[in-house]
Structure formats: structure tokens, C-alpha cells
Length: 197
Image (cartoon, rainbow, N blue to C red; front, side):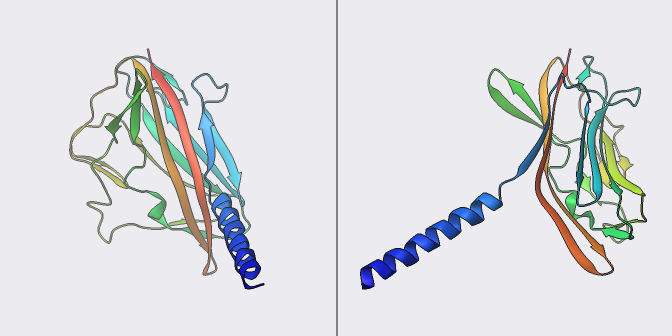
């Protein structure tokens, strides 16, 4: 009797762990190189998220000419009826990181900035968005050295990308408050595949 009780408890524990771990998996939003719409657009809990790469004309794209500069853009729009305050912690140290695919290998090329919040007095500032307001961040890959693009700092510029296949991705852990109550949108992975000809 004691053995079957231990087995039952062990079984329940095992099932609980399996259910918990399956709930924690990232939801992946991936944009392929030839997708018709070169923008990842997702509405989650009343907030519209958009992630794209902009060409030198400011248009969303996934195919670029060799050595063309491009800009990362991530925006979020408050479609709720209330004012929201967005915590800036979603901007992490691997935000807008680029990886090159080369003969089955992934080569980390880094990110277009050297630091976050480095010269802004008081550090990160929250985004306060009224209904329908849009917040976000963007940063070009090639910057002039010492250029700061809020909230990013670039003490040195990246080299333009050569012909090849690349991707950029980040895990979104987005926190916001409404009247002091905190909400979280976590475990969302945004990934863009792109190429240079």
C-alpha cells in the first residue's frame, strides 16, 4: 500500500513537471526571406507588436544589396482603452543581434551597438503610452562611431554586411502596468531571416 502511494505521488509529480515545462515553451514568430509581408505583426493582449528590418529607403525588407545599410525596428502600439506604462527591461543585451549562416555554421556577428542606456542620465526610462500611442526602438547596423540612438550607444561602428544569409532574433519579455497592476507578455521569440545579394 505504501509503495503504491509513493508511485502515485511520483506519477503526479512527473505529470506536473511535464505540464509546467510545456507551458513555458517560447512561442516563435519567424519571418522567412521570401515572405510576402516583410514585417512580423502580432497582437498580444491588446498590444500590437511589429518587428522588421528597414532598407536605406526606410521600407521593410528581407533582401538587401551587398554592403547596403539597414535598420532594425521594433514597435508596440497600445490598443487598450487605458494608459499603459511599459518597462524598458525588454531591451536586453542581445537585442538586434545578427548571426550569419555559413556552410551549416552559425557565426555571431554581434549587435549594432556597444551598450544600452550608457549616457542617459537616470538610466532607462519607461514608455508611457496613451490609447493608440506607439512606442519602440530602432537602430541602424552601420553607425558613425560615437553615435547614440536612444536607448543604444555605439562607440564603434559595424562593418557593412557582405553577400550571405543572416538572421536576427530576440526573446521578448515585455512588462507593463495599468493603474499600478503589472502584466507580462513573456516567452515570445521574434526572428527575421534575411539575405544580402
